[in-house]
Picture: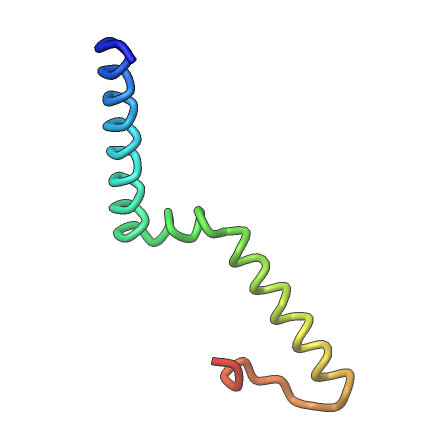
Amino acid sequence: MTNEDREEWEQDMLEESRKEEYFESKIRSDYDFFEQHFENEIADLYEAIEILRNIHESYGYTFDIKDYE
């Protein structure tokens, strides 16, 4: 590895580290950003809750999300 290659590699690593630090800071301090980043997981949760609610109702049970916390 030449010195030029090594410097480029170090710059790339530094830039990646800065991006990761920015992301961590942003996701911990901006709830809207957090929700946007995890929007698929949140949508999956809503879908799972609805399925579970329907299963409960189909067998005559009352669904309460608090039972699963």
